[in-house]
Image 1 (spheres, helix red, strand yellow):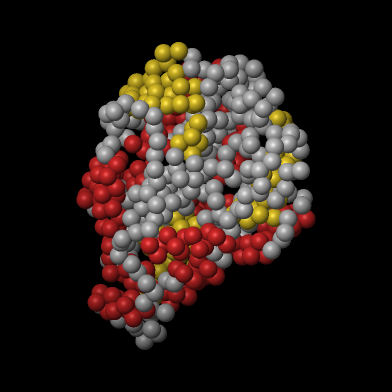
Image 2: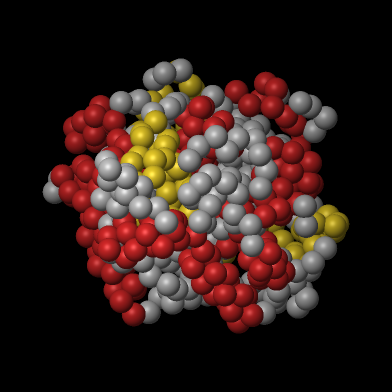
Length: 534
């Protein structure tokens, strides 16, 4: 049967709030016109990645560049339905164990060699299972790989895993050239410096510290595309310089962490620029105050609930993120499948927070302090610093003294992975399905010291483990929804982390460009349809 999916749409007040916030920054489609050929788009890139070969580097900056060089089997609509890329069609057996991908024909690598089913198998089974943890989530479930012909791939799973079909975007499973990498040290292969893909743009030039230049692939498999001649990524480390470059027209596009949300109202007033929050649905970023459940008094659920009642998340969304976020209600973003809005709520209520601390026996000292904790700041820019300062101020109102710790990115990753913190701010993508990006943060089997972006807070509940496992392996959509509903309600009651915001980063681009954001992976997508309006 053909694979389709339907996102569960939100209802009620939360949906209305989402629409209200999104409406301020929604891209307005221009009147349709025949796409024109030619021209260049200049895109901000920061920080400069060491390589843009997606098999060995899946960081955000590498994805931004590599998404134009490589193709995935699929991409995803903004309602998270799979859409064709290198796979022109696909089928799933009724038992959910057998996936058949029918590939586009006449696809060549940038060096002229043909792309075949063997490249798909090599990418998933041999290369990415070693280098990409998200791809390993897929490959670990595959028991057999078959290639009946050069344009058909059949994957058989050990057990049903409905999230499987949502794992084939270019950032998770970029299709890589077997003839270049087979039998080599993947990470040390010289081809990593001049990546070879099947995408609409070919790697041309990299001046370190200045720019990366891609040029049109004249032999691209999608006939007539791409429309642009070049995509140039300008390396601009300084946020103020990126803002000035956007306003002056020196660059045409900035996204993700490139623009401080405080500047979006100003940019929105620029008649030459479009500001949109679309294109992040696949990631569905959730930001939370991570709480080390091993540290007293954070090991007490009442203390964690008190923290939730002490932080004004509406203020964070509107005054710190300037509408580029909405308050998070739990562990699943509203744009992710199986979101459950009917969970316990934690409105701003300082009296309730203090009552919970009183119940614990945490009476204020003579200095008014009930507890002292460290908050390690997330070193990703000014907006995260402002969030940390606001949280410190908020918790001081209930007698919790917070000491802010400033660290660099390497130290942050190391300390979080090794559980060497009391609290920190984190932000993680959800990757379209809770089995892909949500469960990892809460299941006890993923408490792995030394490994960041796992269950680093140390939360453990056997019932939660059981619900996540069942939901991941059942093919029944209604049963999955019910299981994920149950697990969200438990987690929100027990507050393993203090969920703050559903973040939707701004993408800002020059209005002369059409089709900039056309899918749930946004600017990471391949830009084969982008053109300059007349």
